[in-house]
Length: 535
Image (tube, rainbow, N blue to C red; front, side, top):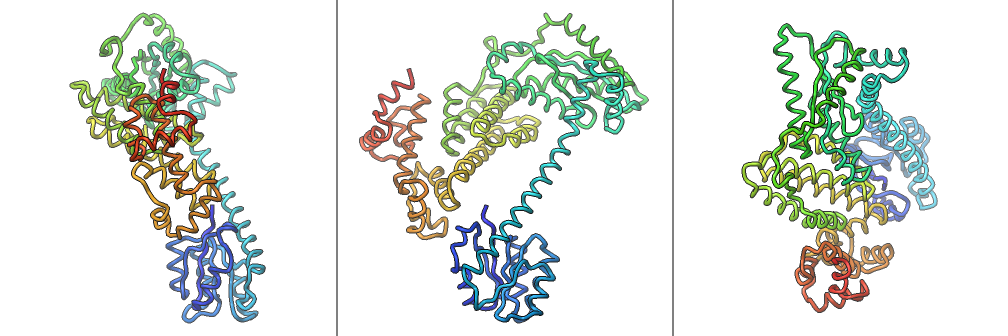
């Protein structure tokens, strides 16, 4: 990360000299703003939020010492270097008193005097950022710990694990929670997925774990602040639901049945899965929950032959994400091609729209498939997938139209593609080259020149050309050509388009020229490549 620097000085020559004195980015900084007096400097700091301000001590109006004082008071995160034409003790003392890191004289300002001070600034800023990151992680850990701890304790209580003292500790934990208290009434749901064995065969261990986690999160959202859900084993979930003791038992029973019905329907809507759900009678002491769990397990065992009625067509609800479309989505995401992912999702939404009366159910199950595919893509790329789970939760209730489904999923996948772009380029390239690579990934199919890209980045074409060649080993045009060929190879591997369609999709105007470049890049013609990968 480049640290942002601004200059506050009433002398234009000094500001120009400071800006051109060193190659700022080489030392981890970016020069991003100038102000000619103290008031303008404060406005610039509020707008840009820099890491470092280099402040002239002798300015008309608000003096440098006063500006340093106000920066320290209003923007304590900003580091300050004082700058002056005079070696005045008052200036030195005043600026350092209010938090300036160092004091430099204009007449002796040079790379040899400036760079050591910048090193100190960078060290202090990175140290503070590291501390802040640690604080944020600690805060997030504690914010997320409460549900995880409650789930762990609930599971221990259900299976009757631990000593008497440990179980007492688990019960005490819930006395400070919105649910599970002894002054409430409780009901326990035991929910089991049907055909869980077939799920474990179709999914690898990580995918299966994510699938169970998603169902747990769904159940947690349904009970809200009134309960807790935990995955137990073999597709079985325990769901605690607590109620305040009301006068009307009928009203409480109605609320319990509403939760049970919502759990059942949500399994089908969001996960295209059938489940068996049984419930306990109401009880008032959480310490006795293991007894009810044992009774529900016996009840579940007796009902194992029962198959709840779920509408199916042809022995199983049809998926509107074909294997070819899944391969296309994976390839488009890998290529960071937002346009292609959007097109594929529009095709899927059109298939859902043509499905007739069962549209909400089909939209729901297809949404679940695409969310799970997005998680798989994020994990394969090594980027954080937690935000996808949050988007999935925020998507409840399910969109009731193909248009809403299309809009929501395109938004999700466009963000995923952008996350992949940033991840892929930030790790390998500097700021300008990374941005140029992302422009190529976005506009490769329509064509973009070095000059147009440089204009977007607000740098000269010659500067971008030199940086690009140094960091990628290719010219801008060579890189885009190679990217187009790689993208065409991905599309060929999906087997969904002809080669004559593909060469135009990736931005080539001449078919023969495309064949020639493909063979040079891949070592074989597109047709040989297609036959090899699509047997």
